[in-house]
Every structure is written in structure tokens, then in C-alpha cells.
Image (tube, rainbow, N blue to C red; front, side):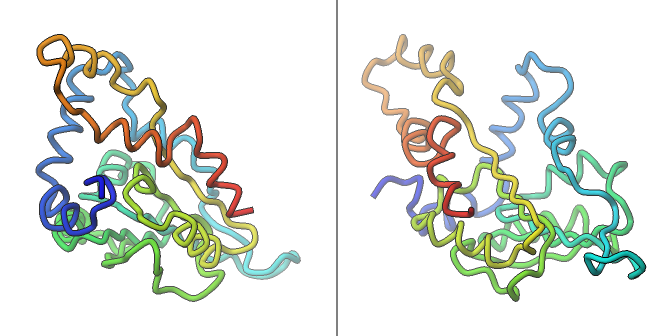
Length: 212
């Protein structure tokens, strides 16, 4: 089994806490050519007004937006956008790693509209139609049963809800791959290769159709 979907390896080594993830984040922050920043740009893509009507007809009181993030890590997306989060959003940050969820809670637990859960994307412990949006950034290439995870996302989404699934393309970090090959042609940089084969910008649409 490739390490990218080996749940024991991911839980107990790679994502035991945010150390390895933060090292990769710093690589992007130091050398990215885009000064705007990934998390700020991604937040721009969330088409979620602060409030929603509780019924389709007019006249019902507005209710809070319920948002679930799967694989939240230490909460980078939200920490980089604290100034933009409406008070009416109810945000559930979840990760299958206890260490990750604890670090997210340490950074954001003082905010009343956040809650924190340990969740496997293949078995989401919420009732059907509960959320207005489900977010899964760079997660699905780690999930052994992606069809099940996507079905679970669909189940917990409202019929008017949206799923936001971020991933990389086949050309991601190609300069780094090329550099490593120059120093050692035998280097097995298989993590990125396998992630592209499993769920990438180039094939993600095929998997995403299971949500429709």
C-alpha cells in the first residue's frame, strides 16, 4: 500500500501533529510567486452569504450558515481569514488526527462560532442535510474509499449546499521534482506522483460527479 493512503502511517507519523504539514506550508510561503496567499484566495471562492433563509419562502427568520471542514489540520484556512468570518457562521473543524484537531482548537477555540471534532471523512457523524457547505482541501488523495467519502459529504449537505474540494495538478512542484532528480535520479518522490493519480485537478472531476 502506498503511504499516501496508509491510515496508520498518516495518523501516527505524517499527520500526528502539524510539524510536517507546517514545513510544507513554509516552503510555499517562502517561495511562492503569488503574494496574495493561498488561504486568502481560497476564501474568496466560498460563495457563502453570512446568513441563509430557514425556508425557501420569504418571511422566515434567517439562520446561521453551517460549515464543515474535513481534514482541517491546524486551522490555517481560518487563522489566515479571521477578519473575514461572519459571526453568523457556525464552523465545524474536523480532522482524523487528534493532534491536528487539538492544534486547531488551541488557535481558534476562543472563538464562539467554532467547534472541533475528530472525524473520518468516510463516516461523518452528522445527520443528513445538516451543512450548507463542506470543505476538503488536499484531503481526498489520502482517503482509501473516496467514493464513500464523497457520498458522505453529499449526505450531510443540504440540497442547496456546496462542496469545495481543493487539490493539485500534475505539474505541481515540478521544479522541485526536477531538482531532486538532478541530484539523485534514483530518488522516489512518489508521494506527489501518487496523489496526482488518485485525485488531482486533472482527474478530480471524474470522482466529483459522484456528488451529483
